[in-house]
Length: 311
Image 1: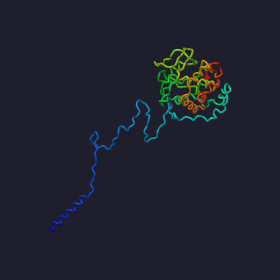
Image 2: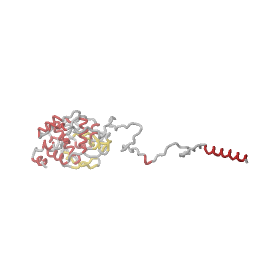
Image 3: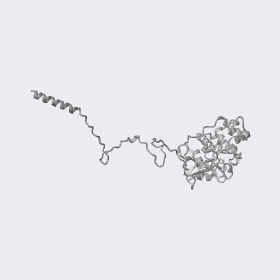
Image 4: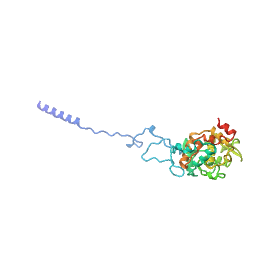
């Protein structure tokens, strides 16, 4: 009996020691296509942001281990973001114009608002005329379609652009590098306009199979599309103030300039462009900042302008 008790005690101790020994966990294997053990972490496909396709720029980017790179212009230099524009000048920018009208206001604007750093560089227009829905493109002035910023000149085509001088280079060389006078524009329609003054009427302009809103009397006059008329009118008025040019040498009449200016009022695009040119060139288009200056200077020119400005 004693021998059996001793055997029972020894067996019980052995059982207890075995149950306290820590077990070694088994490695969990995940199979790969080759049948070998894979150490990769599975990724939920819905969490991956698709990359750019066909040269398009993605609208959102996940921050990576490297620093972000600013978009570049065609020259390879860093381009400032579209929102990086100078603030609207303080109230005293036009302080000396208070209470003035007619020739007195025109002369004062000429005195205080001269361009300080005009330039004919492509980057100026890539920046100022950037398309609102595509930061890699410009918006063409007369056809209102987007063209890639880097597609400068070349042979005429729907997809290449040039620099359109509202006050033409050959007739008005003093303003040939003024950024308030120059807009990005599809090359062929820029050529059609040439040195023609602005007026209303003519045949519809078709460019590479695209019917535009512009009209032209061949060899006589050019009418921009409605979307561009306000920009054209304010650029014409700017040139009259900045260089004391005679307005009717570039547009049919003062009445027509005021008409387009009033019928096609300031847009967010006008404001943004004015800020960018001010940042680059150091002066502003006063008719964007103060649309009322148009009638204050020229509203009493004749009965037509008086009636127009009294509305």
